[in-house]
Amino acid sequence: MVRQAAIFDESAGPSAMEHTAEASTVAWNIDPGKWVDDHGDYLFRYAFVRLHDECRAEDAVQETLLAALKNLNTFGGRASERTWLTGILRNKIVDIIRKSCREVVLDPTETDLSDFDPLFEREDEFKDHWSDTLSPRIWKRSPEDALTESEFFGVLHACVAKLPQRTAAAFSLREMDELETGEVCEVLGISESNFWVIMHRARMSLRRCIELNWFMRPQ
Image (tube, rainbow, N blue to C red; front, top):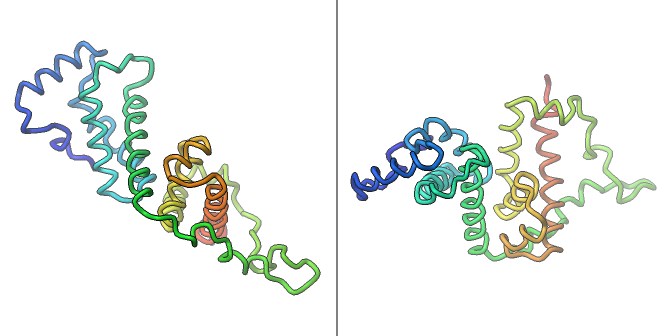
């Protein structure tokens, strides 16, 4: 939950608030005082599912609302107020991910696929094919149906949160925010070949986790 008081810099004094109110009247009658009530929970969820940390998500939302206040005159009314705020938040999240991932040296295990070797271990003529016991199962519910169930997103988030930081970030930036491969590599400070290995690890891990915690559980 984003706190209302945290949006405004109390040390700025009444003049800052008066200026904001005046600007909001000019800029499409936007009322920043309603942002927390109208968009706070949505923006927090958007940030949390990508950063997997409540404190960082709340900080990102607060920085977004402050940035929106300072740049209120850039809102042109071509998109909805929420879409405009989400765009600012998206850029904040990318900056946070860029900073945090570049502070950590790429661990060789992040591009090592040997963890998945047991999935393909078998002694018959189909060596190197899926193991009979660990191969992907036939899902009782389709992915399309799962996406309509809010509980599924809780499982997905929990599975993504279990991934290594850079792996989770790569998956979120590519699959959730639809950044191009080159953009993701720039943000994470990795090569394109490393990116594809990391994405393969992410998809394999997520498939197994989601199978165990959603598609194969008793209905």
